[in-house]
Image: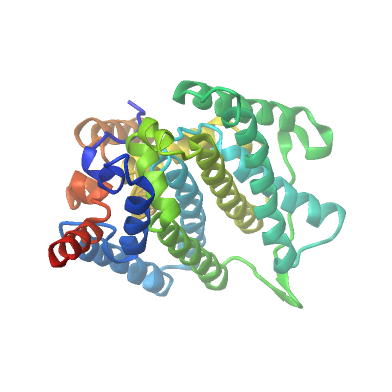
Amino acid sequence: MLTTPPKKNKAMNAVERPSVPTLEVNLAAAEIGETAFAGGVRPVLFIIEGLVLIGAIVLPMMLHDYLTVFATRVVILALFALSFDLVWGYAGIMSFGQALFFGSAGYAVALLARDLDITSILLVLPAGTLIGLVFALLLGGFLLLGRHPASVIFVSLGTLTGAYAADRLARGWYYLGGQNGIPSIPPMTLGTYEFSEGPVFYYLALGLLVTVYLACRFLVRSQFGLALAGLRENEQRIAFFGYKTQHLKAIVFAIGGAIAGLAGSLYASQEGFVWPNMVGVVVSTQVVLYVLFGGSGTLIGAVIGTAIVEGLSFWLSDNYRDIWPIILGLLLLGVILFRPLGLISMVLTERERVGSFAAKAQKKKAEHHAAS
C-alpha cells in the first residue's frame, strides 16, 4: 500500500510548545547538522553510505565493458530515484508523474542535438535540469498552490494524469518522433572529447550522483529539512506555527523535478535514444518501486533499491526469460508485505530512519536553564 511514512510524535520535539515555536525551530536547525539522528543511527548510516560508495567506485574495475554500460544505467536511475525519495520520503508527496520531468529533459537533450547541433555537456546538462525544474514548477504550482490544501489523492492522481497526457502527446506528435521516439542522439562533448559509453561516462554519472546526494543530505538536515520533517509528521501543526505548507511542498517538488531532469539528460545521452515511455506512467511507477524496495526517507535506500531491482531484473531476464517478470513481481510483493519500510529497515530502526531532531539542542537548553 503506497502511503506516507507513519507519524511519530518525537520528530516534532523541535516545535512542541506553541509559545516559543520560532526559538525551538531555530535551536533545532542550529544543531541539525550535528544531531540529525539520535540513537547512533548516523554511524550506521555513514557505514552504509561509505560501503555503497566504495563498491560503486571499484565496480567498473571488475566488470566487462557491456556490464559497465549497464552499471552506468543503474547509477543514472539511482539519481532519478533520489529525486522521488526527496519528494515522497521527506515531503510526503506521492508523485506518479516523476517520469514527466525525467523524460521531458531527455527529449530536450535529443532536440538540442538534432535541431541545433548542441552536444556540449556545459549546455546539455543545465538545459535538462532547467527543463525538469520548469515542468515541476508548472505542475506543482497547479496541483499544490490552490486556494485549499491539496490532498494526497488529488496530487497523486494529478501527477498520474500529467504523465499519461505527456505520454500520449509524445506518441502523437510527429516532431518528437511519435511512437518511434528520437534515435541516434550523439554523445555529449567537452570541447573535442566525446563522452561515449564506458568507464568515463560511468564515473561522470557517479560523480553527479554523489554530488546531488550530498546536496540532498545537506538539504534535509538544514532548517528547511527540519520544516520538511515536521510537514511529513504533522502538517497541521506546522501550518499552525505559520509555515506555508503548500509552498514548502511546491519548493521540494520543484527540486525533485530538477534532479529528475538531470537524470533524464544523462539517460538520453547514454542510451542515445528517447521514446514516449520515458515520460509515461510505466517509468513513473518504476521509480516508486525502487524507493519502496530500498526504503523511503533515507536517500541511500533509493540508491540501494534501484541497484537491487535493476540487478535482479537483468539476472532474471537472462536466466528465466519466460517468467522473470512474475518472479520479480513476487519478490517485490514479498518485500513490501514483510518489510513495508524497505530493505533499509533491516539495519535501521523506524526511529533511526525518521530521526529524533534537536535532541542536543534541547539538552543544551536544559543545561542553560539549570545554570541560570
